[in-house]
Length: 285
Image (cartoon, rainbow, N blue to C red; front, top):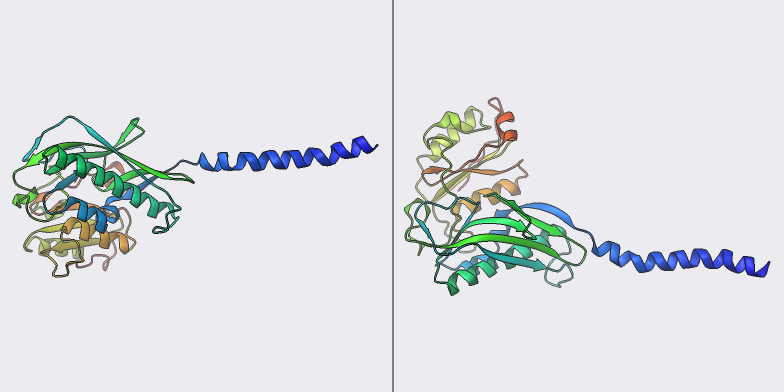
């Protein structure tokens, strides 16, 4: 009877001990795929400092006009740990740090190879599958670290996107998509009449400039160079950041300077809202 009782108590204890031993392994195995907005990560001060005034970058596989590719594909892996004292344990914050580290790596590779641009940047997690986007990057978040893998090409750019000298502050360089003529107001997706009027006004603004649209009818425009040195000089980053900050749905660059860079997706063609509620179109600066 005593032996029987010992077995009945020891068995659950052994199970609990085994479960405790396995818990860290199971937790570390978490691999959450996240698609994150580029604007929030690239606008970080550390990224801007790494790019400096001499280096431009372009996300999306298309190589911008005027860029001479110097190399075959190069790769960079950025990692960040959630237990750093200086960052949050939130997956999004750790992913931004991982993207920052990957971009800094690409910047170092560019300078060491005499390049002044990194173009064709796509997410390439574990060298298995490409995620090609001009507005998002792919991050894999776990319990102990987050990882961002990038693939890109090093290039020389004599003149930056939209005719701006490369010596100007670094800017995102999305290539023209050919979706529509820059002056064709009717082709801009998701807009109501007020939104079209905002876009028409934006066309009169001086560069550098950018125009962002969202699936819920929200738009944001940016132009010129802000006087505040703490504000990004990149109009595309400013417009995207403001769009995300206002909680708009699926913010997308429509035009930069004098080129339409928008790529319609299947969802976008179905969600155009010619009668979107007035008041969603907001002015930028």
